[in-house]
Image 1 (cartoon, helix red, strand yellow):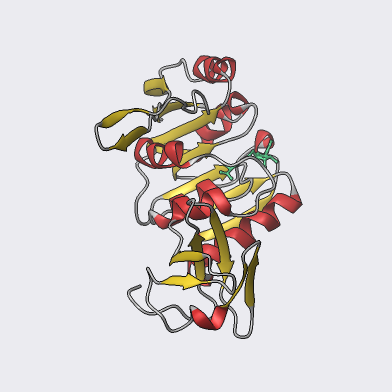
Image 2 (image 1 turned 90 degrees about the vertical axis):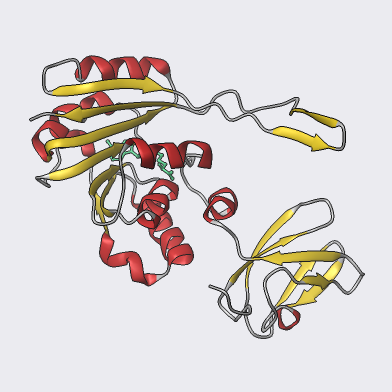
Length: 256
Ligand code: SAH
């Protein structure tokens, strides 16, 4: 990780107003903006943190994008789950190296990338072929080909069933997760965990009803509120604006 920028690396360029531009370095290429351009050659072989200056004198700080940066900037088909929920989902689902996860839908791959980063072994079911392609492209682009033996994608409708058995986790981001609960009961091993992300509380409630049996333990629903703070000299206070809602997280432990 700690090496100078090279062709093929992703770079996040931050201008003086903290506007963000994500590029991939290539020999002979240029980054163009309203303030002229920067040849990629000015960034290649230089260390992270350098300040590149455009032909019209604008300064851009150059950093490798974090997973959070990439999720916010990457190309998307379906709406992605935001970083504030991605990390809690991994904690609730107890994701770790070698954990076998069924993920559905796969969408743009933001949750996939996060769970792959945490070490999971993912089987993904997605009904839209274009989204499968998008997710695979995003995963490869950020994590490289090295993770692909842990990322097994299928063009499938998860409401029709889950083929896998003895799964450790089922992680859902699709409109009717309650329809997957009976299939999860076939596919999860005892002690396995189901997590469902749903924008609406009605979806969470219906999922809870489907999980309201002795087969499930410790079922709960929660939301994650993330309030930023403004910190400037003596003015230290919560930001005036916040994202008030993204989705609800419902989790339960399968007993078998
Ligand atoms: N969590 C993803 C976004 C998923 S959006 C991310 O972070 O990028 C919801 C996805 O569920 C969409 O791609 C949609 O096509 C898919 N989907 C909807 N119903 C489905 C079903 N029955 N089986 C599989 N995928 C489904």
